[in-house]
Image (cartoon, rainbow over all chains, first blue to last red; front, side, top):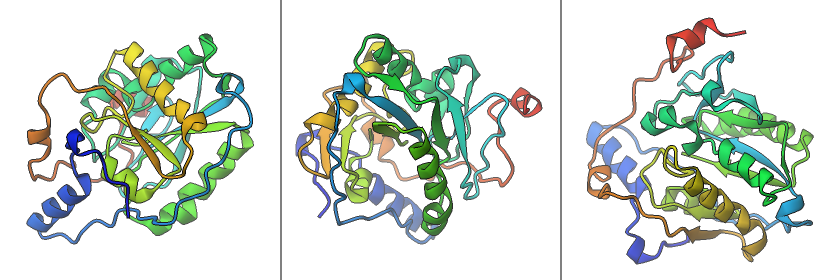
Length: 168
Length: 97
């Protein structure tokens, strides 16, 4: 059973909502990822202050000079240098309100926060690049066969100690 | 990190911090660096503090205005999906290396 939220949070049920919205429009239900078996919890081998952190974000972030994402099951990803100027970040997505992200991309790509945490010694360092993709992909098969292996390989090559996933 | 408890609980990652904000603000509010640092610190802190897989920890931050009734309205807010690159600004297309 998926973990229930505390009742007082009164969380928005996005799964029920998309189900109901799509039903109202006559669409089939969107099949959200469902993983009942927990993955093994990897134990950290060093303090966070000595750890190298990789940022992986699904909000369709790209850097000026890169090709933007398309929105029909784009399984490509981008590598963004972690010393990128915030002014060079852009977003391209169809399934979330990008108003805030286009004012401050950090809301879906918290690079300034992570850089501050390196400066303050909270984390050891960042990998050379962050990885981004456009998470509005309807084919779980293509996700598993194309996007995930490519990003896993590139993430591993950077040898992070910790990976921070930021969905939207 | 997540701002959707139900999606994350079902996807079942090893650990996640939950921020009860409207979608599109997973890492905090725009131009609120101190808040973004708090959110990232809480998320990364789970690397050491989480003791079982599937942990989701709610953060204390609350959106400053009422937003959930509107977020719960049934509507398809997705934009049309194109199979060509969709640039944020027209100048991005000409800047492609």
